Length: 65
Image (cartoon, rainbow, N blue to C red; front, side):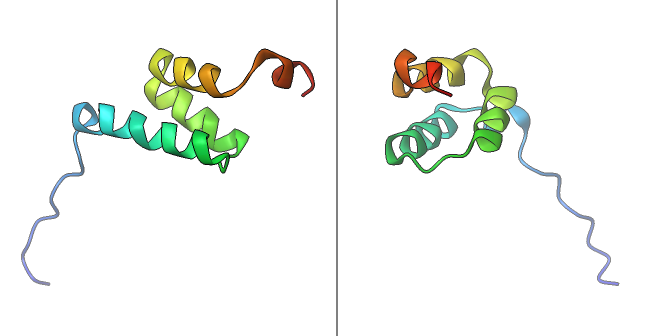
């Protein structure tokens, strides 16, 4: 063993940043995001993610699903 203690992961506050929401927006623009991944974004970012998703998913598209 090396004797090194594992470093903790990234703090939640740092993970839940505008940078993360920018990544979500890039994925939404590209149209390469699956429903399970969208659910993860919603759980992690809540209302902020929902607002972005609503901008990229017109109501008429949701009605057809």
